Image 1: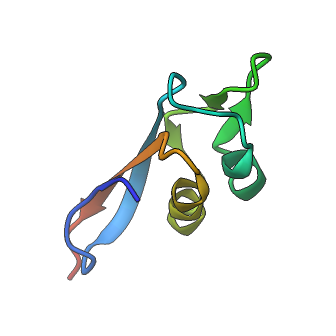
Image 2: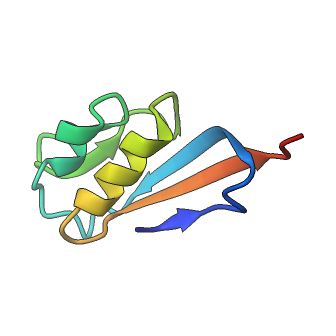
Length: 82
């Protein structure tokens, strides 16, 4: 899992997603798990639909974990909890 994040005590307010197309082997696991965030291009390589995604963080992390070649990086932005 590749997460650029802070403490788990903070609330996640947004996440930014990156995908390394040079590493991608086109398994499609990311698309199956988080279709709102990922798609496969004509070359069957991952494409990020929108780098600042609306998808649930758990789905993004599951997609990251499901990638057989670790081509996905999730950057979670946190805000301080009360």
